[in-house]
Length: 465
Image 1 (tube, rainbow, N blue to C red):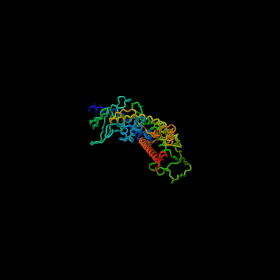
Image 2 (cartoon, rainbow, N blue to C red):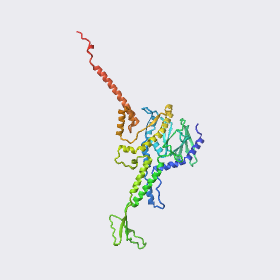
Image 3 (tube, rainbow, N blue to C red):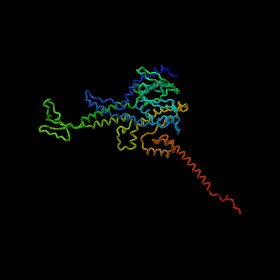
Image 4 (cartoon, helix red, strand yellow):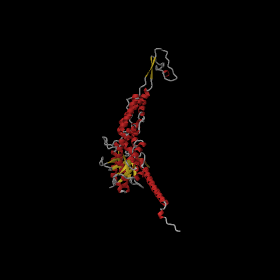
């Protein structure tokens, strides 16, 4: 049953009011991704120069962690187990250009802990639309086990003839309800609703993990790395202070005092000992002694920063060279070993995200009225192999599978890194066409051989005189 206008506005108002904590949390995570970290700790009463150094000392490695994971997650097909061709909902994936747009879904889930995809009827195909958790919140009857929410509220700032205004969409199992924020913060005003006919709330949630914090929020990869990022910024600030104030040698003079101004009694500025390549300090008093302080040794701070970056890479399950940029004569086996932790994390995310993408594609089939594909629980998304391995090593292993284990050659084409399902299907088509031409050529050769064979002597008719 479609909600009444009063119930729609009441539910939207209650969900939006209860979502204040989520908005504050995602705003903080976005701030850290953009490099707007908390300023390193400073003693009270510091100078503006030190505050500027503290702000400039923020070394933002969090986007590298997120992108290192996102770049490994690429859905490349949707097929029933054992099938060579993709299932029918894959056409809707291509029509919505999800090859490119899938990365935004994975990025939001890894960054914030969750992300959402909305599926609605459209022409000529269903519409698949990623929505950021900064704009949407979903309410579930059973948070742990329900595939689809009871309600989902999407709020975005949009331009209207009356100026910028918050617009909202409330989703449930029957319809999409369109609302607009009232001018003076008095809640929502009803605009219209459109029935979608899917019998479920058409919102699919992508979770980075099933683990939650004390407030019940699903944890992303950024929230757990903020303390380590702050510690790295503090170390980088200490290095900046040393470079600014202690990296050069301080000189001193004992037994000498600069001339003073007769009126003020203060040291004259023009008599200061300013170091320069064109200046020579000379003192007539033989008791004056000159010396210098050693520059502060930065080696310990540099090692500390490198160790913190390496520790951050270990916690985030990212290959250390992705953050440190250090490669020193590493073999292919050594490089593979450094990425084992990330390989395990990517396998886990492919399992979690894969189930959600299958829900999305089954919703597309339901929109089309394809009940067989909508209830098909055997089809699964195919992930592209993005493991960092030598191509020659992989081809050699696949060739041995074909030769030694009698695996059909076509069965291993999809295992070649970087090869898409479209390319595999093209190769299969060319192989079939090649076989047909070969069969035709063999048939024509046999016919030509038969036509040119000499007739046996016994079959030659006797000549008549």
